[in-house]
Amino acid sequence: MIQLDEYFAGQRREFDVPLMFAGTEFQKAVWDALSRIPYGRTETYGELARRIGRPAAVRAIANAVGSNALSILVPCHRVIGADGTLTGYAGGLPAKRHLLALENSLPVEIEQLC
Image 1 (cartoon, rainbow, N blue to C red):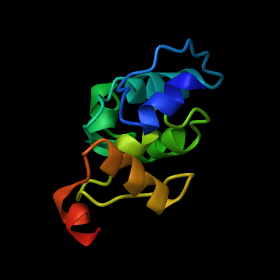
Image 2 (cartoon, rainbow, N blue to C red):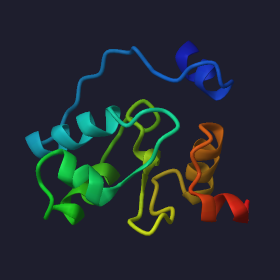
Image 3 (cartoon, rainbow, N blue to C red):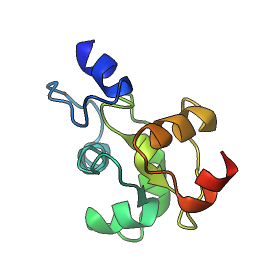
């Protein structure tokens, strides 16, 4: 896919591929919210939960994020722990670290470890 090649080359910040989410209404709301986290930014699971109006659903948010089958296009790598740590990622934490570094959005503590 050309858009992914452009993303990895640092030439693309947004995708304009039509997506069709297949999941529960809650999962779709989470994935839509993930799609709205801008390139170069991170958001915590708690912030994501508050943004979709479900502040007490942090664990359910984390499960929905983990169920995202459209990684990178729906940027679940931009979600971090409340303390700024990198938390689970289906592609592994090294891949998450790489994607955040590509976007210049590694949390300061993590950036110092790289």
